[in-house]
Image (cartoon, rainbow, N blue to C red):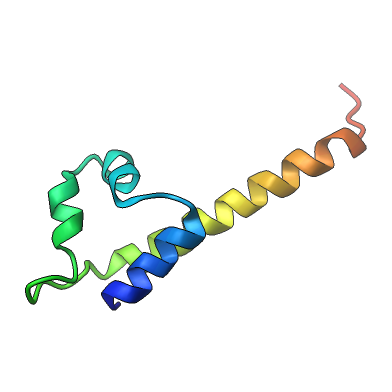
Amino acid sequence: MTKDKFKQLLDEAEITQKELSIILDTSNQTINNWGSNGRDIPYWVESWLQNYIKAKDIELVAKVMKPYIKCDE
């Protein structure tokens, strides 16, 4: 994954590199180094961000639909 693709996915996920570092419990410097100075972005980051984006979308749909779903408890 390129640095540009990484930044694009962060934008789609609506998180910053700093927020990602907190979520992943790693240093911001480590994430900042990804894709720079010949360092590869870890292979799992692209799929992780794509799944994070999908999860946010699902949470939004669930929130919107909740008032219209009747549950017998």
